Amino acid sequence: MALRRSHTNDASATELNNAAKTLLANIRFLDVDNPVKTIVITSSIPNEGKSFVAQKLSEAIATSGKTVLLMEGDLRRRTLANRIGIHVRYGLYSILAGSTAASDAIVATHVPNMYFLDAEPNIPNPSDLFNSRRFTTFMASLSKSYDYVVIDTPPVGAFIDAAVLSHMADATFLVVRENFTKRDQIKGAYDQLQKAGGNVTGVIMNYCRHQSSEYYYSYYYKEGDGGSAPSYESTPEPRNNEVPVTTRGSKSYASHIQTPSPSRQRGYMPATKEPSKRRNPYLDPRS
Image: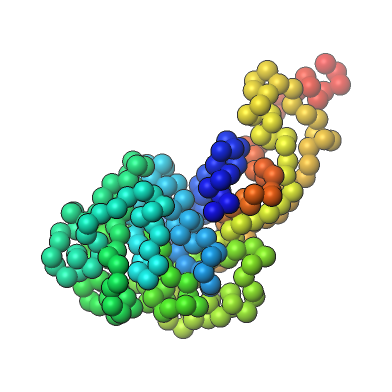
């Protein structure tokens, strides 16, 4: 993917990690009284980057100090094992069949606090598997064992697996690739999830493109402490690339994952702190 190639750029990698952390923060504040623990990540059609979003969200959870299990729920097109570089002998089907203990199938990843559960290939009738009583019981046990469970599922428009899983998850997010997915496809996926009783919590925009701002990263990553901060007049205004998220409570938040393409430049990441109240000698004409 274009995003993996961009990891050679420290600023782009930092921007992506910050976007994943922002998404996690929004998820945490969806309902503070009833925290989200089980999360389904899906999309309308293939090639929108849902598996990548599931991986980056899981990494953000793990680096925040919480335990997370990343589960392969796209049983027809398994990609997570190759992405994170882990291959195991047993998976979800072996656990539900009773031939393997969960502790033997769930493995630790290279990220502390992050664990992975793969699925065996060629599992017949995945939707029936997810609809089974054994899987429901298994999900309940995972929710008690880990702070978060993130499930990567097939696109809604291709199979009903995501709709089945969204019904038992605390939150379901629909990944939408910018300038790629059609409005009718998104609406159709949303309607299908709603009819299945899924808790469609929000939308995550992926492959977002926006005007770059060299100010932030040149100041913090190139100039260092000895560099001069540019004037306010030369600082570009941030552009709004955030996507509203419908929440379960009375508040609403916005989330986005920005997936750079090979042609895009480094993006603008808004500062999260208020400007300092102290006089800035670079900006104050009295200095």
